Image (cartoon, rainbow, N blue to C red; front, top):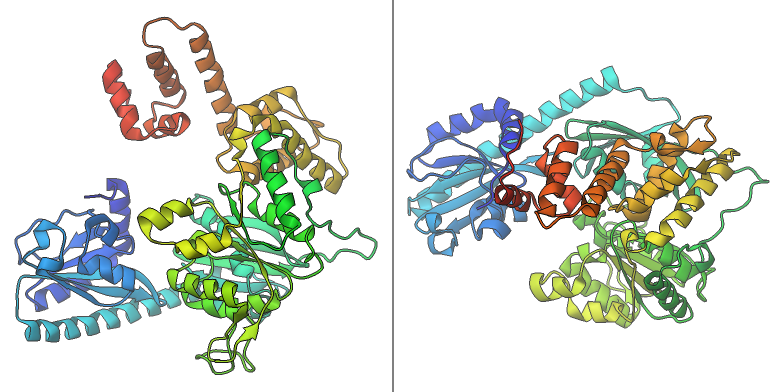
Length: 570
């Protein structure tokens, strides 16, 4: 059984504590055990103990972690779910009934009200669940209204908005507000939020609660600032500066713009060049940030379809309930909120050109069936229509997953679709496996910044050495961001030395040098113990940091510490 870390559990309990009164009140009205389970499946608090069974606080109850149960099923289905006795897989639940009722805020499942009973009276239990469901629905509406009031107060008191900016407010993944200008931007660029998905994820995973960036989508440039407040994201959008008439048009990506001389990378380029001369489907495999979209653009721009549309779609970023209408369109009146006259889907927009399906491994199974039919029949059908529309598109798909494993072990990807897409397979090596390409790539990104800002900056030898020692977990995308940051931090300095790099890059280089010194002085007596001691000393005896540097789990680090009799300083 998996458990939530103690610190995170306390944070979750604190977040929900002002609402505990609801669970305590309902627990007094019905003779069942009541649990609060968060959206990730962790048990946050228990409010009664009729069954006399110990359900550990912090335990995880998702289906994939604990097997069949009503709480995990409610999280997965986002609807009230009941699982009885023998259908449970966990031995504690074999003689019980578990019920999960979603608690929804702005239509997003924020948690689950869990119910446990050993009472077999179906009719009485059914009536009770109806009453409890009504309580939960009212509770969800009250929380939503309270959050709306808090949101309004935050906007009035703390949000600076000028008349040229559009404002979009997201609650987790749902748009809960957009002003008129923002609606205009979203209507003209349907994939605007999709294009910001990685930036939003970064904002949610770091302490800084604000981010500024420029984004080019199609032919339009946007200046964007993003703020996080509680579970809300504020996205301020305005149009970027238009290019002047005398400015050079943007150069389309081609294989001439792809940098690298590593043999495995050149093999990938060769396969891509061959694929560009054909009309066959392509599957690009590689870690995040290795340049999958760059390759897809190059294949399109050197193919016979180069003068036709190239449309990129992130399959993992479009909400499941919208992805079908985004890809294939809909007719007028197909559903509530549909546009007058209907809407073309992205496959129709790309007719004659190329559709780039990024993160294809995230595509829902039901849509995979539809996509397979489109590839076979070369036609699509809009939602709400029965008349097929012929389309001529070439598919380039990309993923950072092993689709063979998804087919064989997880059943989350269809084998027939995989073979249809996998005519040409291009595997992009991560940057850490092409160390000799790192200096050239770094110089290329610096040259771009020099050209943009009319400067002549250069890296010192030490800086290039640090770049070559670093493992680049974020690959080329991470390198581009780090170089841009150190370029601006260097101010008016002509040379960019290690002092302008992020501290973790410098400290990692020092650790590698110290470890290298130890390795050069190796004796027969425990060289690994010396390496561990150096890493611990330089990282304040932080086991998590040491495990990341060594690329092993924290459990393995602790085992090595016990093996060598190393005690942690506190």
